[in-house]
Image 1 (tube, rainbow, N blue to C red):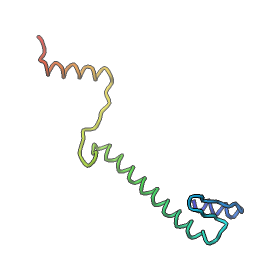
Image 2 (image 1 turned 135 degrees about the vertical axis):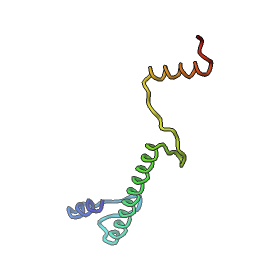
Image 3 (image 1 turned 30 degrees about the horizontal axis):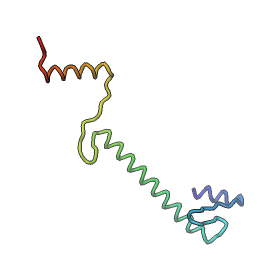
Image 4 (image 1 turned 180 degrees about the vertical axis):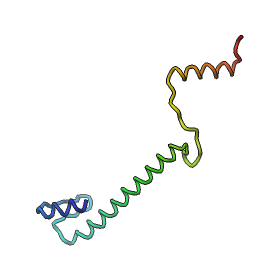
Amino acid sequence: MLETIKRLKGLRIEVIFHQEDLRTSKTENDVLISILGAIAQEESESIEKVQEEMKRRSDVGIVDGRYMRKKTHYSTKRAEVERRIQCWCFVGMKT
């Protein structure tokens, strides 16, 4: 972001941050813009790390600190066969 702002500033294009009430045309805002840019970059990297860790934990079956059985995706036909087997075991197969 900072490089883009520098390039725009070099082309004499002003960038205005309305929420922070900062303008790149004012030299006193340069330090503050740099600090805010560094904070935003750090937050972005932190969020990315958390998302990667959540995905890794999900892949090994950890949810909220507890191990869970991984979800498996079965075809509809296989699911129906397994449901029937479970019913037979529960009720008792008629022979």
